[in-house]
Every structure is written in C-alpha cells, then in structure tokens.
Amino acid sequence: MRWVTVSLGVAAVLLAGCTQSTGIALPDPPAPAAVTTPAVPTADPSSPVPLGTTLAVAEAGAQLEVTVFNINQDGAPNSAPKSGGHWASADVQTCVKQTQSDFATKATDWAVSDAAGLASQGTILTDASFPSPTYPISQPLGVGQCVRGWTLFPVDYKAVVSTVGYAPESGPAAVWEVSSGKVASDQSLPS
Image 1 (cartoon, one colour):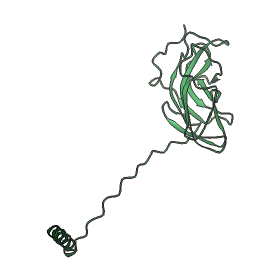
Image 2: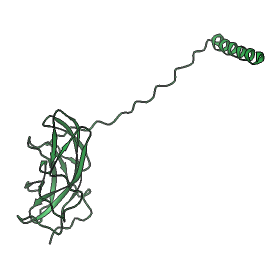
Image 3: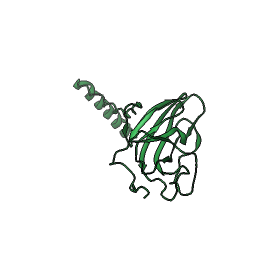
C-alpha cells in the first residue's frame, strides 16, 4: 500500500512539475461551431418564387411559414367542378412559428391564377376522387404545428395554372410561380 501511495504521489509531482517548468501554454480547445439555420425569406407578393420555396408570412397576429411543393394541372381527373372546367390541385403546407392568439388555417387561404390572370380560390368541397391527403377546410394550429395536403381549385376548361398564392383575408401574402420543370407527373388536361 505504501508503494502505491508513494508512486502516485511521485507521478503527480512529476506531472505538475513538467507542466509548470516548461512555460508552454496549451491552447484552449476550439469552440464548437455554431449551428445556423438559413433564414426563411419573407414573402413578397410582387416577386413570385419557385415551387418548393418556403416563405415567412405574417397574418392575423401569427408568424407562419408557407410552402407550395407541387402543382397538378388535372388534380381530380374523374371529377369536374359544378361550374364546369376542371380541378387543379396544389400540395401546400402551413406551419405556425409564433402566434398571439388562436390561429386556424383554411383551404380558402390559397388561390391559383392562370396566364390570363383568372384566379380561383381553394375549395371547401370534398370528394372521394380528390387527391389525398387533402388540405383541411379549417384547422386550428398551435406554435410548432404544421399541416400539409392537396388543395383543389376549380379552373376554366383547358386553363393552365401559372401561379399559386397564399392569400388570406388580409390580402395576397405570397406567390409561387409554376414552371414547366416542377409539376406533378400526370399533367394531362381533360379532353
């Protein structure tokens, strides 16, 4: 036991003496790299963005992030709006980042327009032939919650959607441009 105690004591003195006598200061370990999340751009309705872009939107005391992922020019090929034409659909998402009160997202907050500027608001109708999952007609969301689904729009016969907009009651807030390169695979229009 005495041998172990003496050996440990000598080792501690030697180590302490070595670090003190050399006078070399060891550098501090590097600080961990800060993880930064790229800022989500703020929506500007006068500057359409490509599909897939997430935009920050302020609406009714809430800070939202909204995204249009995809568009299908013939969203429900086995169904037609009562007004005629066909259904276009958009795969959209709304996330609540901050809110001061209850916030409910609605399918009617979304709209599309064609090259001629004819606009159509998201429908509150449901049908078994609509793509799934459907975006909710109205759904309360809390901070940190998101909802995603397909919203349908009645559009004129042979109309081709050129923009998708998030347009709540407070007015146009965000616009996505539909390009020929980012659309759902089945793009045939009703004949």
